[in-house]
Image (cartoon, rainbow, N blue to C red; front, side, top):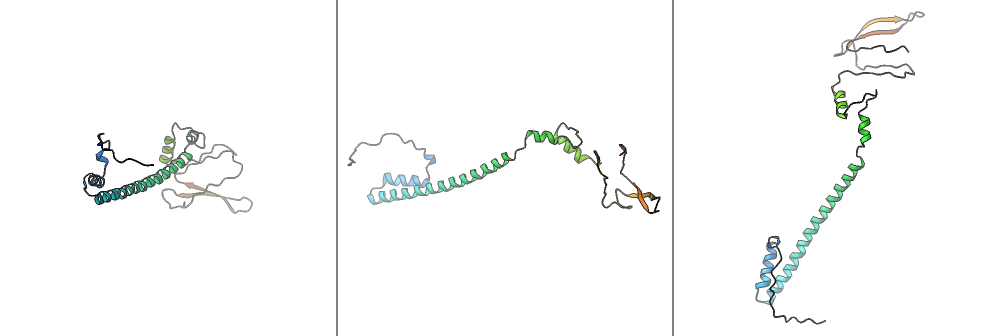
Amino acid sequence: MTVDYRDPTAITEPGTIDQSKVSEANKQLAKWLREKMYGVDVREALARLAEQTSSDVYDDRVIALALQTLTDKLSKEWEDTLAGATQDSEVKNARIDVNGLVYTTLKSRIDVLQLSTVTTLYVTDVQEIQTLRLLNLTQSSSPMRYTKVATVEDIFTGDPGLKIQDVSKIRIVKVSDI
């Protein structure tokens, strides 16, 4: 296929390239292509333009790959977040304490837990003897301590059996007979 490179007409269409987006290096190469008198200089300008374009494309590709990697990472994190998303029913259930008391908001329930200085122990449906153990409680501990009130001896053997202790700041209320 032969092409006739003898078009004598000038290019009259206005340029549509936004010059503010053209690098200074490419502007210089375009100037040389337009103004150099000798073919060797025009060919050198064309060669440098090819190299500059390749360099620009390479840099853009590196940036695009880094952005794609970041996008993939963030997408994975988002999918993991959504997979562990809290269900409405879970939040509603968390408003109810073990005794069935329903709080209007989860925050109000947590606030009550954090602000409470009293620990309430509930015993329901007792099927066996329960033991309450208070660690590091001594007659001189602070802020809680105990004092001996009485010892009940086994009437048959005379051995000490039940020891009754007075524990300051602890109140036990009888709710029913076992």
